Image 1 (tube, rainbow, N blue to C red):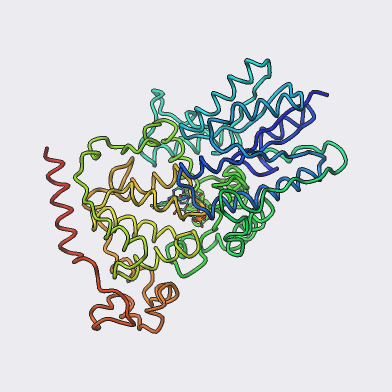
Image 2: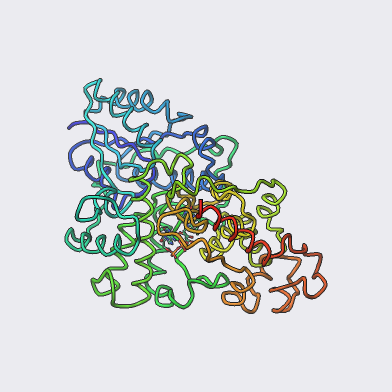
Length: 469
Ligand SMILES: Cc1cc2nc3c(=O)[nH]c(=O)nc-3n(C[C@H](O)[C@H](O)[C@H](O)COP(=O)(O)OP(=O)(O)OC[C@H]3O[C@@H](n4cnc5c(N)ncnc54)[C@H](O)[C@@H]3O)c2cc1C
């Protein structure tokens, strides 16, 4: 039987893993994962996300061991080392073919091309699959073959292509023999403990499936009415799993499709909305693949690269610490700092506060989010930031600026979330949680760092001038 090597990356799962499935169909499989702490640091990946990956690695390695498949976990440090490392392992097990599922960003693509070259030069075949999004990047295009840059027509086309193709997932790979010893990820990598965040974020495929089942069985039915209320558990919280690949987007889409009576749109409006959110994830990943410059710090709208952003490390740090004096913004930032996750409504509010009210470069916020998020995903984070800053594809218009007080009135009217996240306001009344400065300050909570109206006017004036030139 031929020996096959499966290089695992953002696909730490048995189900709907085409590379793993295909390899096991035609050969004897060994799995490989490269730990790349220097690269993770260079990409500014959050410690909590790295710890989540390490725990997920333990889980998949156990699952594979039960199927007679050995996992090799090797320290490789940077992407530059990957070609050498993968070739070394492939030769050691006498692999005739190496399988992997593609990653989308430019550095990952370059790394993979280098690995594919070195393997081909050594006479080893490469089989590249696609599993990070439901439909492969480049496959959802306009009739004239150009890429979409607006979400709604993208979604329409995505739905029609998905229906034509059928909503399929790959089963788990077949077993290869008696159980083997399971490898374990090191307890610390690059100074990051594997246990970091383990109470908030149980890792691995089994946990992801439990969460998906629970959500699809009940919570999804209230998604429309609850998904914007940060105080409630109204969303799936599957994002860390989708980002690490312990669950595939395709798997979520299939579960929602089945629950919706085999419909991708219409049917139960709550499920329809949830599917739309998953399509946003598809959209941003496709946009990234079509426009690699986005991974090089460039705005989607090139003209916005010339905006005269302000520079203030003091203001940036107050925003990062959640000490802006605007409770809804600060509650979001403190949720992020404490847990590694932030509710979507607050991601939009905090991002707009940075890029619109403070008029600081959105890239600073993007990098800070990435450095904290357990679900950090380059495409979704970049897309969310550029949407908020009005520099992106299909972004909010520049003159639409969320007022954090009005947002709190709509989405946390009793101040329950603010009280939970901000100890200084734990005893505050609902009105005090909205505008504590009107009560002469509450519980030592900071004064507002800016005048909202003046900041808004200043930003609008800068944008208007930039658009006129
Ligand atoms: C400034 C900003 C930064 C963001 N950074 C990230 C990030 O790094 N990683 C990330 O996964 N999401 C990011 N998002 C999108 C969104 O906030 C999260 O996906 C969502 O909050 C995750 O919670 P959930 O799993 O409970 O989502 P649910 O509401 O249950 O949605 C299900 C899944 O759909 C996807 N999804 C939902 N909303 C979006 C969206 N607007 N864009 C893209 N995908 C979406 C996610 O994979 C999510 O897990 C960002 C949004 C903004 C505005």
